[in-house]
Image (cartoon, rainbow, N blue to C red):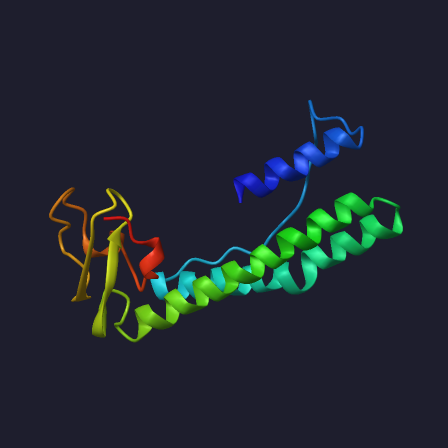
Amino acid sequence: ETVHAEEFLEMLKRLGGCAENVDLSAGYPFQLGTTAENLAFAANGEKDEHDDVYPGFAEMARREGYNDAARLWMQIARIEGVHHNEFQSLEQQLTKGELTEKQEPIRWRCLNCGYTYEGIRACDPCPVCGKSAGWQEGKLDKKEMRT
């Protein structure tokens, strides 16, 4: 999300906007619950940005003649759609108890140190850096694996 904000700031600079002091006042829904609930909340927020918020900003930019800004809003809206799918998948896997354990062996990678291996459950702890199973990413395509 920080990269998206930086891209929007660069767009403002290119369009001649003031980049030294931007005063923003806005509200955005915030909810706090269990990890599974937080993933569902995050998925819903990303869906809202993908479906409504960013396309609305893009349409306004287009109407005002800022076609490059409109394209940027729509490109980032598509990314938010990917985030929605990722959060939704993580929430479903966590709810089903399948986040760190699978029915069949898959490839796992430690997000901290890069250790990779094949198995039905994530390393706990990682034999290289000691991070817990929550640091393991599963179902990597073989071309992503670097051994």
